[in-house]
Length: 274
Ligand SMILES: NC(=O)c1ccc[n+]([C@@H]2O[C@H](COP(=O)([O-])OP(=O)(O)OC[C@H]3O[C@@H](n4cnc5c(N)ncnc54)[C@H](OP(=O)(O)O)[C@@H]3O)[C@@H](O)[C@H]2O)c1
Image (cartoon, rainbow, N blue to C red; front, side):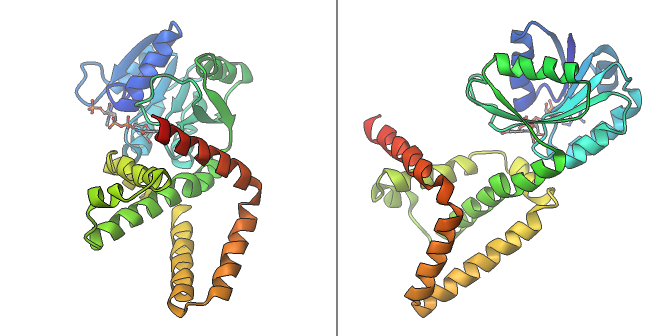
């Protein structure tokens, strides 16, 4: 199978180049400055993979869509799915949206999750691609573009938003990060680690995930309401309301609480013993 990765010179495209090559497929890539252009890559490939920055993805797919034929398959690796999948569906090709739920710094697909939206594809074509990922250790989870983007507004956007708010708060408070770290124990170090890790990533990627997902604004609005509510409880020193809020949320998290304690205990144990 000839696989063409548009954006294969980038981080995620480069990682998937390795995945397809390890599975024995011929891979060609384009970037903005490669000799090979997107249109030539499309003409020469059986499977076209789009892995460009989120804000570039839909316009780029619209540019190449007229050149795709029905015996070809187009997929993408974008962190959002509704826009890219709808754009891919304007072509004649088979269409799958993928979203790798990991950064390109991982060493392999072992233990990683890839979300998949098989939108207009024969079952055999989908299985052929999914088994390349599964054979290298990934879990492929099927979803729809709409469900994906709704879930990502919580799983990724809300988490990134609250993490950035914590960083911004510490900055506004003039916190000496190294001094604060000296006074932490592993559980707080895990939280601080997640903030430091996020701030080490590409701001454009995280900005696109927050600004281009239409399901994010209501989530951020609810976050604002939650902080206002909690602030008012704290400012009034209202322990009764605090317990109620705590218990309402404990009920929401009930089915995850035991594993949450176990998973974080394992992380703490790891940090203590490393
Ligand atoms: N990084 C992550 O943690 C992560 C995780 C999950 C999903 N993703 C998804 O992966 C995709 C790529 O992200 P990335 O982190 O790999 O970004 P990246 O490292 O900045 O790579 C972007 C790639 O797009 C290429 N590109 C930009 N415009 C192009 C054009 N018009 N034609 C051809 N190539 C073009 C760039 O080429 P040149 O720079 O060589 O010109 C580069 O190869 C995004 O859709 C993102 O949502 C990323």
